[in-house]
Length: 113
Length: 108
Image (cartoon, rainbow over all chains, first blue to last red):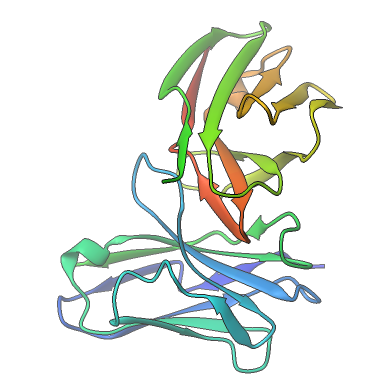
């Protein structure tokens, strides 16, 4: 089947604006993860979902960041009042169950001007 | 704290063998992953070790010693397409804790 998909692939926005990033996991995968990656660094954990619920959101940097997965499949990462420091590649991954191998989407490159 | 260390960059010659080391200190351990990441692309899964020892998969092998907090990725018969970053990640309490990655440069 299809792999993890993410939209948009690139997003340019202005400081202070609101953005939504979408992730469509592999069909049948119950766990979904969001990461943020800056150039030359490994991915930084943000949040993961087991089904519809956020099982661990300890990586969200502040309350401007929020994520949902209302039907246990597609997830949306929402960033309010964007700041230049939010510029990064936002990666989504899914796994068939928690702690199983994670498979990554192509990422969304967010640039905040 | 949680810490994963890998060399920042390594250089090797096409056709040769290279070993990329990873040491870790994490609060929990439920396995160690190696991922490959080409520039501008997402990480792709290479290997998973949860028990001590060597796992071999074609040209790539991965080794784990839990008592030493140590793993390595061994790449044989290097090809130019192996030029990429190699990321070590530890599954710790349902999170993946990532190293910064090792950039591998392959020279003809």
